[in-house]
Image (cartoon, rainbow, N blue to C red):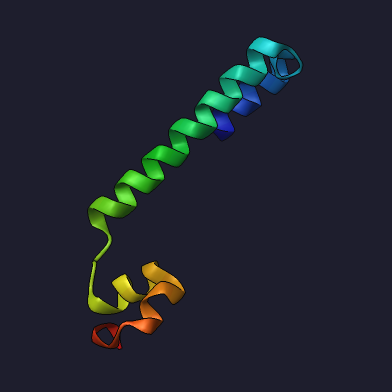
Length: 64
């Protein structure tokens, strides 16, 4: 995203509606990639599952 933003900043496209749409699409694409790779490669241990579920898990005795 930094390269796309740098090129658009140099060319002035970041001020146009088209440029804002491209930057938004790049952000969504990068965010989706980070989430997908995190889910694919993150080790899901019992501690990881507990931290992912947050406070909902506190009421279940099997999660402690």
